[in-house]
Length: 247
Image (cartoon, rainbow, N blue to C red):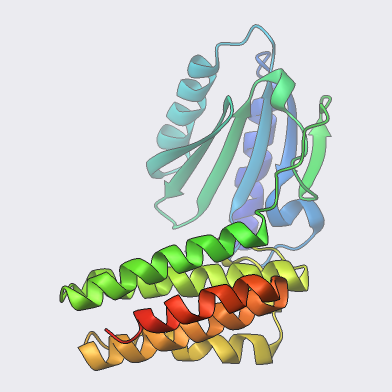
């Protein structure tokens, strides 16, 4: 396990490496460190802006070699957004290090967790928020597949689909309460009454009776959340979704 001091020192070293690289024209803290919200479990989140003539692949390769040779990386994976690649490293200490390598035109804040360290940032279009009605649609789609999975005796798939219904209900609740909706980041900020209503959707075993119980509970909370967003839609969805749970 890494210490807070070790994490801070590594971040400083990476920022210094970026400053000394002519191909990097800007750097920013992102994530919790950008807003003073770090705790002992936080990872390192950095965004690097590349010069217009920089070879993105070459910069990636050089920083990746540095992470493996000097800082104990054991693996990495990439996430792409437009032309920006987020390279996510796992260190032997279990520290996660996320470094975004952004073309000059894409180096800028996508949300409030962006604090410029050097260089110039370019104003970026904010990430869109999903439409609640689309989340409702994904919820009933997962419900359809939960029903067929239970009927086919595919218990693990049924559990996956029931969890999918619950996840979309929780995203709807996050949007309604104005807390972060992505990747569960705002779930701890939801009112206790809201999360308590969703607890019965947790699947406790793979027995058919238990899957059906959790499935019915997931349909209940999906319809309840939908009724707060579009009462007419909830009324239309109620009969077919209730029918699903009579597998």
